[in-house]
Picture 1 (spheres, protein in one colour):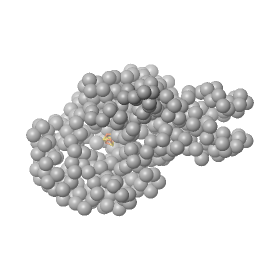
Picture 2 (tube, helix red, strand yellow):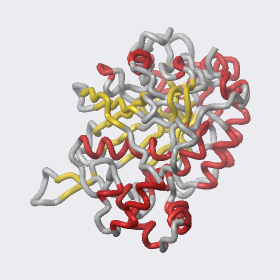
Picture 3 (cartoon, protein in one colour):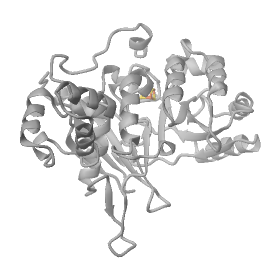
Length: 388
Ligand code: SF4
C-alpha cells in the first residue's frame, strides 16, 4: 500500500547524484553569497548571478555577460545550473496547458498552467514538489505512483522558468499586454504547490524554492499569491508558517477520522482533531484565511450530514472551502457526484456561514485537473530509458 514510505521513515533520494557539483540555482541568495565568498568573490556578485538565474532563467554561466570571463570560467568548473527539459506540452480546450518536464536523471514531473476563466490578467501555475508522492491519498493518480524522490529547489523553481519560456515571457516573466500600447504584464500571477507530491514532505527544498520565487531579485511573486497545500503534515506545516509568508491550503476531504483514514492515510499519524487544532494555532495576518480543500466523492463524503459536520468542525476558523468534484481517472475507484449533489453540499456549507467555492475542473481533457497528475506520467516514465 502506498502512503507507508513517509510513515515508515524510509529514506528518499534528494538528489539524483549526491557527488555532483553544487547547483547554484538551488541556492538562496545568502547561500549563493557564501558559495561565491568561498571562491573569493564579493557579495554583490551573488546578486548578479542570482538575477541571471532567476529573473532571466539563463541556462549557462557563459550567458552571464556582466561577469568577467575569469569568474564565468571559475563558476563553470565549480558548479552546475539545475534545469528541467520540457518533454511534452499538451493544450486543453479551455486554455490550460500541461507540461511534462524531465529532470537530469530522467524523472518526469508535471506542471499545469491555468489561465483564469474570468480575469485576463490572472494566470496560475500549479507546480510539483516531488517525483510521485508517498501519501497515498486514494483519490489521487500521483498517490498511486508512490514516491521516487524529492525535487530540488532548482527543479521546483525551474518549472516557472520553463513555462515563462514556452509562453514567450522575458526578463522577469513579462509578456506584452494585448490591451495596450507597448505595455507589459506578468504572465504568471499565482503559484500553487498542488501538483505532484506532498510539498511539506519536501519542506527543506520547498522553503528554499519559496524564498527564491518571492525574492526581490528572484521571481518576485507576492507571498500572498503563493499557496502551499498539505495533506496535513503537522510539524512541517508549523515550520512553513513560521518561516514563510505564503498562503496555506489544507486538503481535508473527510469530516471524521474513520472517513478520512480511508481517503487519506496520513490521518492515521495526524488525526483530524490534531490537524484542526494546529490550524487554529496558525498565526494569520489580517484578511488571510486558510483554504480547506474537499474532494467530493460520490456516496463517500458528499452527504448532507458530511456538509453539516464540515461546518461544525470548521466553526470559528478563518477559512474558506474549495469543493472539488472528483475528476474521474483510470487509477481512481471513485465517482464524481451529480451536479445537484455538489450544489446542495455547497449551499449547506454556505448556510453554515462558511464561504464555499466549487472548483470547476480545468484541463480535464488532458488529465491536468486536480488529482489527475502523474497517471500518464507513470506510463511515460516506464517508457523512458533510465539514465541514472
Ligand atoms: S493528493 Fe497530494 S498528498 Fe495526496 S497522494 Fe496526491 S499528491 Fe500526494
